[in-house]
Image (cartoon, rainbow, N blue to C red; front, side, top):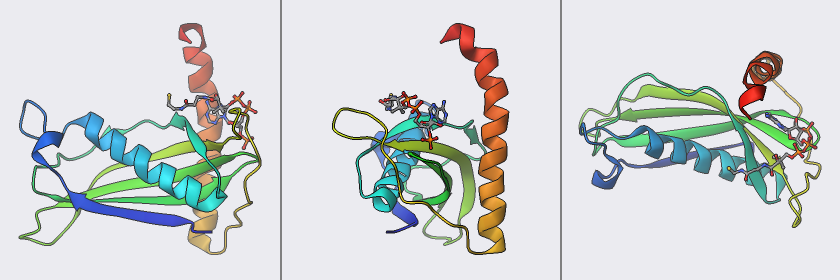
Amino acid sequence: MEREITLRFLAEPTDVNYGGKVHGGAVMKWIDQAGYACAVGWSGQYCVTAYVGGIRFLKPIFVGNIVEVHARLIYTGRSSMHIAVDVSAGDPKVGSFTKTTHCVIVFVSVDSNGNPIPVPVWEPQTDEDHNLQTYAQRLMDLRKGIEQEMSSFL
Ligand SMILES: CC(C)(COP(=O)(O)OP(=O)(O)OC[C@H]1O[C@@H](n2cnc3c(N)ncnc32)[C@H](O)[C@@H]1OP(=O)(O)O)[C@@H](O)C(=O)NCCC(=O)NCCS
């Protein structure tokens, strides 16, 4: 069972928007892919995306940048896995990476009928792990208010 995964690749010309930078949809796809690989790697089961936390695009990514998408499990419920995803990018000629996005994404493990099924429990080991788990739990609490606010539009 792997708790984390890093995808590394070059931002391609097909990822670029009309302004010449990587478009947000491409970044969201990479976040979803890394989160999916992490969730499946942990659970050993097929998983679906249940929720994507507020994504803030901090810096642009340019075509030809090396992109690093790091996904790390930070909380497990019964069937859900909360995964923190950090995206960084940089010019390979320079060699340094800048964080461009962070978000928390929730995957749910499902059976062949799409019903949620239990996932192996993740136990935090280090102080950092405990902080991350608490962070995921605080986000869950905050989400209740957001979901209530948005419920009339669902
Ligand atoms: C994700 C899905 C399986 C959850 O089904 P559900 O009927 O709400 O199931 P439950 O109420 O039993 O919840 C299952 C888990 O999902 C979690 N969950 C449900 N809604 C959530 C939300 N808005 N945010 C975060 N987690 C959520 C629950 O907390 C629960 O976690 P737990 O088992 O660890 O306690 C269902 O909503 C679904 O199939 N959604 C579509 C998924 C999809 O197609 N994704 C691709 C992008 S469109």
